[in-house]
Image (cartoon, rainbow over the protein chains, first blue to last red):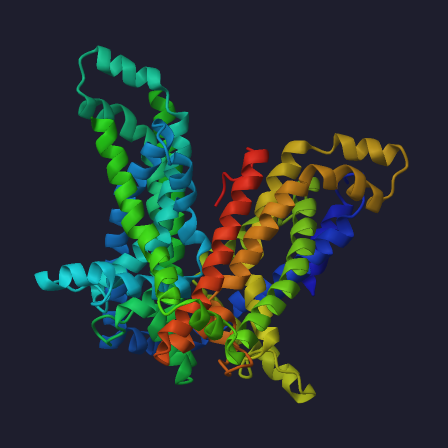
Length: 287
Length: 267
């Protein structure tokens, strides 16, 4: 395998660190990464390459595929907006205020990370189904959350809220409060101060938080399928359609949808990265 | 006034979105009493699922520790071509959704994939069994240890290790007596996160498990099975086991970040 050799060969020509263990640790690392990460990824790339444009377009133009993408993306967008707003609120409250139960609230934010997704899934159904605490409350009003598109949004919000909070929190901690005080002294209202002093400085964190939250929501499976209803064209998410195609041994179709979802996630991540760099440059320029 | 409103709103959101579902698990599981819960948890299929989940975690944990230490050491201590690419590759599992991850493994290690097909004549099957479950669990958990240990190694620097080398220590001695004490907590922290994730992984495992009752069902999969069988009490009882483990993870995290405040910043 050339991958195993090239870095080593090049190293011999370079200045070496005197510390022992390079061969062993790099060998283990490269072997592991090849078997567990690189090879599986190339499996998808290989299957994708074999598809050809016409096959790919055939799979992707299927109304059911398009509907599943629409359901997934719109739900993920709404969940991301909710998490952007409440993530900022939670992060702000956790950093700026001291109140009884603050430590508990801080720990609670990580609960969706720690809770296995299938557990989250049945728990959400238990709350939002017709016989659940919230489901039974809203039923007389003619509202339904479980087994509708709204259920998907709830599940995505639950699993991705920690991303938003944890990305924004450190930036609030680093805020220079003197700037806010200065703005207040100059007669700015609280809202003006927040709008034009605080928010711009938090924007990199909000961007990362919402971006990660969106990517996570796009790919969420376990928590969603229990509460979604999984009706084709209406409440079927893209990940579920991949599983269905796999069960039918339609590997090309599964790969086409999976490749599209993966590309979408990667594009979002790259765009965040680029915007992030620009934002920081702009903030540094302003300071 | 504004302060009170904001705090109240934050608590209300956390209560409705986060606390309520978790509370629902326990109320549902214990709704019919402790004995019904105990009977559900000790059901043979559920016990088999718990056993498989523990077995998977026990295999994945040491591999993760060895890989994590090797990768962090190699990346922190040496400069080599492809180092940045390696760093990015190790982070990739965090960016890939569970179902897509499982599919990737099927495509390469499954019976129709190049590696899977090549191994088949020798009677070796990698997917739809314990091996497949372990492989995808490694995929979804491998970034955790590296992510925690690498920053600590980079910050500590290698002066102490070089000094130990000059004094005649061999590689193992340097690691055991110089490096290890510096990274112990980061390692423990990363290992806890990785293990928690390995125990709870649902999507990726569901693709490659084959879902054979009593054999290749991990506990998160068993919950879905019970739930779809309309055995809700059984499903919620099994869910309490995982929910308790999740709460335990949070407590351990809290303890570690209390004693080592530098930790706990990353998700």
